[in-house]
Every structure is written in structure tokens, then in C-alpha cells.
Image (cartoon, rainbow, N blue to C red; front, side, top):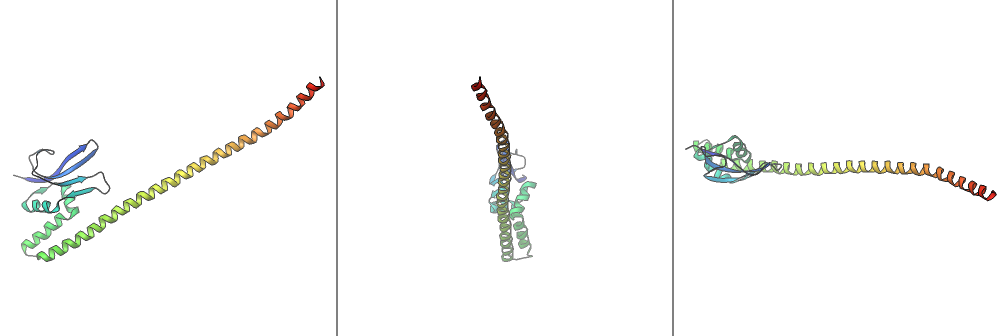
Length: 179
């Protein structure tokens, strides 16, 4: 029986989430599976990958073949590197202590990279929000200034007309008084 580590889709339309499962290669994508290892959410930035790395490692050592997407996830989280080191231990190229030390060092560096990306994304969002707010403020001030100028022009044109009407009114009153 060929065993695969693959994704099983769930969630609604255009809001997909995936389960990382170990399944027989002949079973349907969303069908029967042997074991659920975790979840994958591609909609977040960076994508959220939660799975039990020890179970995934055990299945890889038993011969389960990951799909391309799952292989990338396992590589991202260091499970394939751990398998590589373990094969070196089995062959006698390195000791288990050296393998554990290399793996823990790699995990620390990878977690630092992930955290820096997460903070950079948050900082970039804040910066974009500030720039958008500044642009909106600039447009609003330009509109307010244009409205003030339009009102000032309207007031300036109304003032001479009002003075002219006031000058004509006493003349009419004077003519009526003469008659």
C-alpha cells in the first residue's frame, strides 16, 4: 500500500483551509485518511502551518511520500532536514548528539526568520495605513480649500450686487417721494 502525506481541503468557497493527512494514495482527496497531522491556512500572511512534526517525521521514516506542497511545508518546518540528519546517524556519518545540535541550531535560525517576517509584514501594513491616511488628509484639505475659495468668490460677487441694489433702492424711494 502506497502511503502519501497530502492535503485534504475543507472550508467554504474561496476560503479554503487544508488538513495535512496521511492517506492511502488510492483514496480520494477529501476521503478516508489514516491519520491527521495538522492544518494549513494559506489565507494568512505568512501562511499558517500547524502540524505535529514528530508524527510527520515518523511517517517519513516509515516511507510515506509527501506531495509537492506538503514537501515544501515539511522543508519549511525542518522535518526533511531532521530526516536527512537521522539518515546520517543511521549510516554512521555523524552521532545523534551532533545531529540534535545541528537541528536545534537550524530551528532557532528559522524561527528568527519567521518572526522577523511576521513583524515586517505588520510594520509594512502600519506604514501603508499611515501613508493612505496622509493621502486622504491631503485630498480632504485640498477639497476644503477649493470650497473656501469658491465661497469667497461667491461672497465677493454678491457684495457688489448687493451694494448696487441698495443704491438703486434709495433712488426709487426718492422718485416715489417726488411724485
